[in-house]
Length: 322
Ligand code: UT7
Image 1 (cartoon, rainbow, N blue to C red):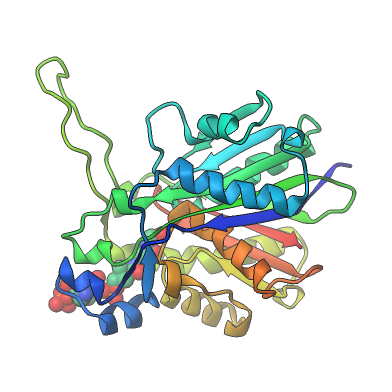
Image 2: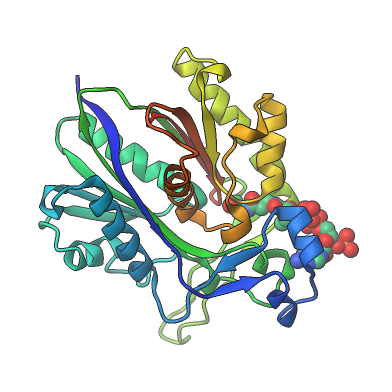
C-alpha cells in the first residue's frame, strides 16, 4: 500500500501592506466595519511582482524545508485563478525557474478551494504509484482582479503564495482528501474572462472584476464548512475529538467562528491568521498550514482537518496527520 505525507512547506507574501485605514483612500469604509465583519486588519498586495514570482519564492522555501534536491520532484501542480497568462501556466514557468526536470506541470482553477484540489490530485497520483514527490502550490494576485471602487469586495482580498512538498510514504499521513463543485450558482462569486463577441469587429474588451453576493456566499460557506468536516470524519470512522485542530480557508473570521460553534469545536483549535493577510484565495490554505507549522500551532503527530470553499462554487477538505 502506498501512502503519502507532507515533508515541507513554505509561504511568501509581497512586502507592501494596506491597512483598513489605508482603504479609506479608495472607498467609504472604516476599520471598525471591516474588522468586526471579517477579522481583517491588513492585507499584502503586489506592486511589481506577478503570481509566478510569489509562487517561486514560496516553492524555494518549501523545497529547502523538505531538504530534498529539486531533481527529486516529479510532479508540479499550481492552484490559481490569477495566472499571469492564459498560457503558459504558472506551473510551466516554475518548472524552468526552479530548475526542475521536464516533469508534468499544470495549473488548476478551483478558486479558493484550489489548493485542496491540487492536494487531492497529487495525493491520488502518488498513491497510484506513478509519481513519488509532488510540489503543490496555491498562488494568487487577486488584488489585480479587484474593483478598488467596490467596498463590498476590495476590503477582503490580499496576495500570497503557499507551497507544500508531499511524497510517497510508508505511513498513512494524508489520510483522505475530498472535493466537490456545483456550477448552478456560479453568479454568487464570479470574475468573467475577456468577453469578445464577434472578435474580428470588436477589439479585446477590458478585464472584468470580482463580483460577489457576499451574504449568500456567507450562508454557503457556513453550511459547507461543517458539512465537509463531518463528511471527512464519517468517511474515516473518526470523531471531532480525534482532531487536534482545524485549519480552514481564511475568508472571514466570522465564518470560522460560526463553523466552530455549529460543530461544537473549540475556537482555540481553529487556526486564524486572516487579520494579517485577508482572503488570499488558493494561497489561503497552504499559507495558513505553513504559518500554523512555523508558529508551532501544528506539531508533529497532530491530526488536523484542512477545509476550504470558494467560487464555482467549489469546496474541499483533507484529514492529515502531520
Ligand atoms: O473565499 C470565499 C469568498 N468569499 C467569502 O467567503 C465572503 C462571504 N461573505 C462575507 O464574508 C460577508 O458577507 C461580507 C464581509 C462580504 C459582508 O458582510 P455582511 O455582514 O454580509 O454585510 P452586507 O453585505 O450585508 O452589508 C451590510 C452593510 C451594507 O449597508 P446597508 O445596505 O445595510 O446600508 C453595505 O453597503 O454594510 C455596507 N458595507 C460596508 N460598509 C463599510 C459593505 N461593505 C462595506 C465596507 N465598509 N467595506
